[in-house]
Image (cartoon, one colour):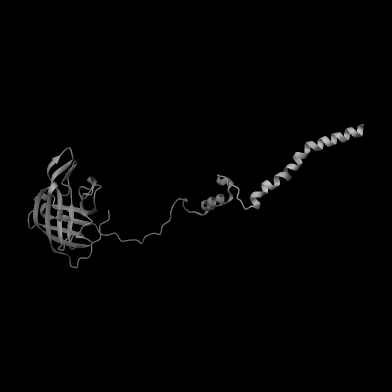
Length: 241
């Protein structure tokens, strides 16, 4: 009886342990299938559990002298700073630095900012002063804080000298005409291409509109080149702001 009871207990225990012991054997084909078939196990999102991504991140962190997101570009050759451009009109006591200007967002020609009201803007898409073509210099007549660079421009007369120093050369122009026109009738020829060196000085005039914050007219002074410095004029280099 004891022998039969022990045998029965042994068989019952083996039957209970059989699923646990056989599970690895039964699941082995399923677990090994991706490896045998060349399939990759999905990587974890965190770089901490991704050996390759972790290596790349920490490699750059150790060896980069600057943050990884910085892009290194080769340095451009050093350029010698050109001398400032200067405009002087002795007859009306004007002496102002010349800075380059372009166009506004609406396509109109840009004058210097109010912070640079004591400077004159050179329209850089036209000719340079003294070079073949029409060069245009624009200046404010005044601001809320006081007179601008061209406050006295209306006082110039025919024959007055306008001096420009640019790119290390001095040029003298002679005033040939002065006119006041409505901004609605501003002559497009001022910005048209040309051959002879002509200098235009432009500022505001007329009635100030407190709604639009603009003057109604423009004063346009035309001056022709008389002489340049001792050397032949080359293409001028724009001044640096």
